[in-house]
Image (cartoon, rainbow, N blue to C red; front, side, top):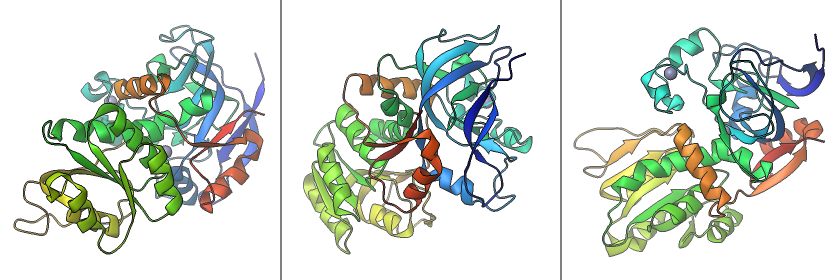
Length: 358
Ligand SMILES: [Zn+2]
Ligand SMILES: [Zn+2]
């Protein structure tokens, strides 16, 4: 029996700091696949997990953090399917039951048994109740959760599985609603880890004018570098500015809100045209009142996209491989994960924080 050890960044108690420690290296059984981790992204939701009060999340501690993971297939269980040993992959993060109709269609983010999975405390996926990828190795329950990335650099591939996929899924939701004639326009509120990818995905997959809004000058510079047609700081008259920038001055066709705060939702509602589309991606705690008649533009549709589907992860990987999407990253050694997480918390990071083996 192998007793190999590996490093892992663990959530050991609610509200406590992340702990870099050693644990047994898992051995893949049945359908399981062991991944040698080449990069693991650090996400704002890792901070929410770390800061959660006991009982707030349906997970059992301890577990290894990290839900944005890329690496190489190191070992496969005897029944494993999918990528072969040695193949480079990114891990599809929202692990569902694998059996319901949503999962069968690749939409494990909307697994019908999500509540049951939470109830038995197996968690939502890697790094979210189950051992994640801030470690030397990651055990994946099935090869169905792996998407090949070819020679895409691991630090680029890892953030695609959450930041990239979530942005792609949000854009996929609004894309069919955009008018084909007459110049559609889409506002992106919040040009951070997800928003800067949404700007690139909109440019690569639609002909819409992309209007970016943020509260930071450097975020607008990033939006510009990502291909946004226009950028503005959040000011009292920003809704009016966005309406005027849209074709015909009637308001924007869609808003992707990566903030989800009271002020961002207010801006979104103020900028949308009648029959427009609002996708609330950010979890900023803002609320909207749905009432007829009310303050929402007539005909507006609101969606709450969560993560994304496996086919969409394949699509965003394909975009990255042809150079249409590039993630802004800042790399840290796995051994300095606690410092990297602190840095993210203090807001001093530019682009996505990614941990790489050292
Ligand atoms: Zn995340
Ligand atoms: Zn399912």
